Amino acid sequence: MLFFQEWTTDLPSTGSDHVPITITIVHPITAPPSPNPNWVRTHWPTLEPLLKETIVPPPPNLRTRHSLEAWFDAHLNSLVTLLKAHTPLQRPSIRAKPWWSPLLTTLRKEFHTSTRKARASNDPQDRAITRLSKQGYFKSSKAAKAQHWKSFLAEATPRTIWTAKKFAIGRVTPRFPNLPDATSPEEINNALLAHLFPPKPLPLVPSILRPHKGCDPLLPSEIAAALRKCSSPSAPGPDTIPYSVWKRVHLVAPRVLTELLSPLLKFGYHPASLKKANGIVLDQPGKPSYDSPASFRVIVLLQTASKILERVVASRLSLVARSLRLVHHNQCGSLPTLSSFDAALSLVDSVSTLQRPGFKVSSLFLDIKGGFDNVNASILCSSLKKAGVPHYMVLWIGSFLSQRTCRLLFQGSPKTFSPVRVGTPPGSPISPLLFVIYVASLYIDLPRGLSLSTLTILRSQRPPHHTERMSEPCREPSGESGPVPGPTRWALAFPRLNSSTGELPSRGTPLGLPLHPRYA
Image (cartoon, rainbow, N blue to C red):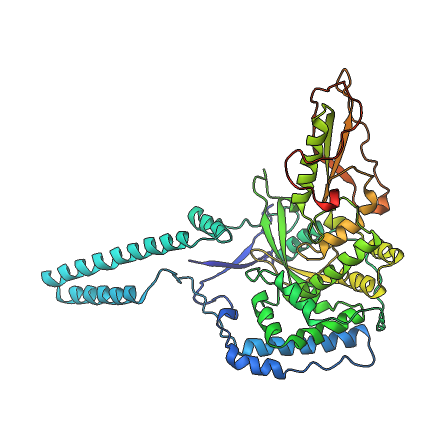
């Protein structure tokens, strides 16, 4: 089996309309994949005393962006080096089989030994022994595969059931981005970056950093609460460190992460080393052709250490947003204790309540296209500052959204970090909250039901003698306000009206479910 490594178009032209391409393919044995740390086998008995002795000194007195980044990178790299020094490397192999056992190794050795002996002696008895050993080896292998698959399905969880489906369907070879105007991997990489991350204005980041007295000190309990919300099996970013490792580190030495991340909040700055991300390029299924960057999508994997701090800021910002009324009062999702289930329950409750006396109920659903990508960081930070959000938080958000880099990963990609300009990074714990704060001014006063990036307009009125068209349900905002809501789907229901009453019914719960206090 040959592995594709790279391709170039550096050969001279042949005079035709075809460009000669040099393709490099390497056998997997001569070019094995780079080993990664096997974090499951980290030797914690030896590592825990060293973590308890680890001391993170305060940042330098002259606090510029470069000095703070140098201080943070030095101590973060020292911590990561300590973790990797006590973690063995994985031994990836293209022939690794999870169902293999020592018994199969013994049977395979006996089969190969009897085969060589039968070839050398040409004795009928030796050939008969070879056939028996072959049958025993193949039958045992088949039984081991069936038993492993049966036990895997029996122990499947809601999280691993999709892995079982992937194994049953088989692996689909990732599609290669074939863009007509790109003649090299670098040009394909740039074309995908330009489409996936269109340029946007960035907020100004001060070069001299000053501590903010209004910043509450970062507590170990805040980091512990943020880590409890992190899923251990989540794929890490360029740092390759899963959340399970950070949870163990914080459990053993709570002050290490606290002293490392606390100055970033105090000075309102997010270092560049935490703003690196991996972008897995995948083709969108069902496209008629794949000769355009629009036929591909990207899954962004962020640094796990960065997402810990992002969850801390998201928790603090959610409290400030509620107190300052930065989000719409009908907002569901991106806020603690409220989710899309609450929005659906409120909508069903409102429709059922209005339908009971026979009112006509109309529901219009609007979706904001490319919501996260269209957030203007400068406008967002300006709005937060005018609303009275603490200054350190505004500066940190501006720094977090600026000077980001991403490394696209596809077949033959250069695998280099390139600067990108994003609205709010997809996959970040704080991005949904920043988005709903950013678009809160676009919403009109609605009776009920508002969820993340989806607007629900509910109307009730006497039914006309004929079906009327709803005109201008939502005005288009000005160009500098960010995303423009566009209808993606809408449904109208016209039940019969009981003309005996013309007033709205009182609030109730016709579904027999308790009404959430937020909607009471």
